[in-house]
Image (tube, rainbow, N blue to C red):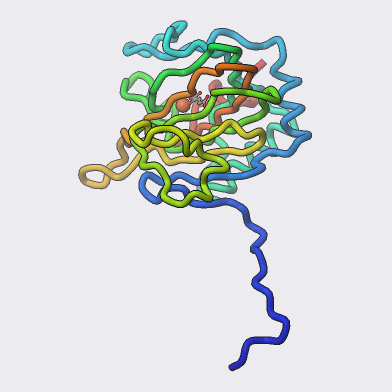
Length: 243
Ligand SMILES: O=C(O)CCC(=O)C(=O)O
Ligand SMILES: [Fe+2]
């Protein structure tokens, strides 16, 4: 058959893109709207505490490896909408009980989060109460100062993309040994799977998902973590039970 007259190749409406197949990493432009970003900023204002991380015993400690400040969000209709979006993205099998409360992270000048994985190695952090380990992460750039320098999210074990069309969202000036650094672009998000099938197809943490929040060298950055557990979290750890 001949080509239809006046045919032009349409651009599909979806705008997400696979960045890496294995580990699975998907880039999501405009994951949240301007209105949502504003709301997130407003409700987290004045609530920040020095970010805690869990030590080997599972005890929360003020971390020197994480100088940013963070807060977990109670649910409201906007938060609920973002939670539903994050669930729907992962296919409809993921239940809302698997979601941790959304966590807003604030970086001021000089602050950073050293290389880490979002999945835990300590069994005390992955008990049934917590729904096991974190199967996936979204890191959402909620907002930045206008002329931010630094503050990218670096994945040192990933290969730099070969196609330069990624250079809009990835820092292509970084040396290749440094892996991949996503730029902090407001409202965009990076999604990745933290766990892969290991021996006898049991899920295990994927070391290649190691990443860091690079120091903000100028300006500020507000980010958001959306973490999904393997199973349901005990009600007391969910967003409907936060003050
Ligand atoms: O700030 C970033 O770019 C990444 C933050 C992060 O990885 C986290 O909070 O777990
Ligand atoms: Fe992280």
